[in-house]
Image 1 (tube, rainbow, N blue to C red):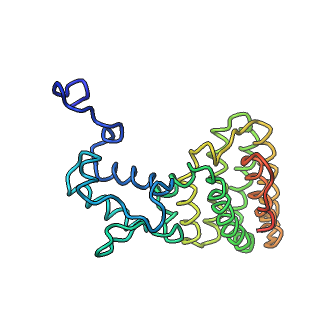
Image 2 (cartoon, helix red, strand yellow):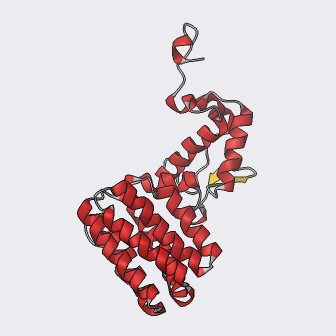
Length: 254
């Protein structure tokens, strides 16, 4: 039933409840946002089940499913005699899409993105070192083609970004480290469409970024592991600092 079809005198549904039909998921997202925002600080208890049912106009089944999801994300614990208690941020699963999105949206979200970039840099630098040692002629040729193609796409940020991701992914594949690649891909998939992470790419920024790609490619083609790793570290760090904007931080020293 739409808002326009609601019976006379019935309360209009809140915005969150007009989301797609998974009410438990919608309620979970709402509570994740409230917890990450600090509406319920660590150690505080969420409202009791009847209060949540009344506040969100949902059944006990929906509330229980939402609480279960919050537990799986590490945001709460159910304690006998205390109810549903919010945990320390140290236990929150930042690899979870809802939790990461809520954290990035906060005023200190850039710090979370800094951590994400550092994690990505550690993993990709190591994978680039390995790729430079074992990349065959086919991989080297494909990397060169991607770099050349990106030079042609510097005026098309969207097209450039797709080739950029393909370049990094090919290096990760060449390293053979499937787990590290999966972690990087999982992290990037959750932020690649956010303005805070992507910044405002211009032709000049794309051109500067591809100079970094070309240095990485040249070092891999030369089978220079340490040179390739250094080039990747510099590229990821400098590209993020440009996209990040604002005051420079100590990312280079982390």
